[in-house]
Length: 261
Image (cartoon, rainbow, N blue to C red; front, side):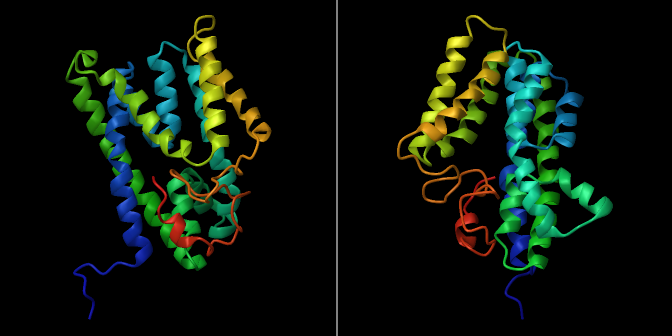
């Protein structure tokens, strides 16, 4: 007899936990989007069709700073490019074809990739991916709507300090990465210096794009750990599929369970 009233397999149970824990952040995104000047439908459309939290925050941050949508979209695409690498690994792991593969491509993000690659069997990987994608998609979009509607009714969002929600959440997403290695901190510091130096002379949004050039400092950093973490831990996603680790989904399974959303 099961000890649980609702017996769930471990992949499904973990997926629901991820969906609930990460999905709550959608409230912050809805708040940041409306505070940046987006309408409620625009904020909800971003969560529905982009569905990449960090990239969404990056786009909203550029818009909030007075940048145009093109600069914001380019920055978001650069930040979301890692999902392409996850997709290369996930395509083999899930083994889906046709329409199901196209739908699954929309759900390839840090959380679903981490949950799937932590499993020991292909069946569990597919279950973990589906359950994580579904739970996170529902929670993220529902809380985006909640945050956007609530913020829209406030009126002057700056009077409550809500205009700082976007940058604060983005920093919170980035902060765990800074603890991975000296190389990561060097790249982050380089990016910050480039952006600060360019802000007085270039239109909003462009300094953020230029800051991406700091990634070139990574290979030059002395004694830096490989990208993906000197100790193998990641804060907001699994080690990249093309590096950092043995490549065996079974290896380090417990370690990957600790990743964030």
